[in-house]
Image 1 (tube, one colour):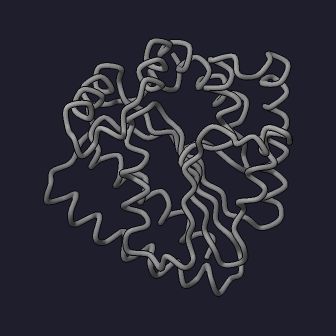
Image 2: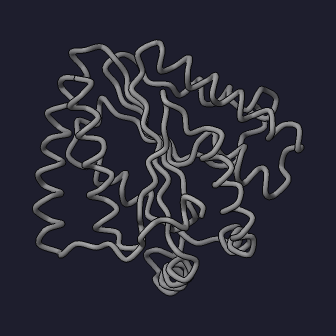
Length: 236
């Protein structure tokens, strides 16, 4: 059985529990932010997962109570013409945080192993080589003192459709849905297979994957923040 098939997507919490836990965890992260600054180390949080899985919502809850001067969020989209001229990791090296700072990637270098692979935006040799390149990239960062956490937020195909339709019908959220999202959905199985191979080959001791049940947003958000707070308690 695959790692995504093993998830129990029915897990959820009550609204009251969500509010209580969220407030507690956000305060904890705020305290850790000061320790990160004093330590002069850096933090990198990577978020991947299907379209509409809730990555943006999780990132918002992580950052909304933190000092914005010490944190940067990068929503990774199609490379620019300049970025295409360089190795695909080049544009991420440019965004690495400084001492005492945190960078959050809403999608990341793992695009090479998923959407670029599935949509054939790169050659088979390129995406196969990327497993080694990414592992070496992450090892270099972690061994230099970076605290790295990688999250894959997962939802069912039916829940994704429900969220797509809700976004399409809401004029305030219509910008969140595009033709590209619908096209990606048509290759759901291919994207899931690519993700499973990604876990197999890039889930390392130095930079392991945290796979999060995102079907119920409140549960997923709390689980991510708990994992971050736990890791920070060990590092700072």
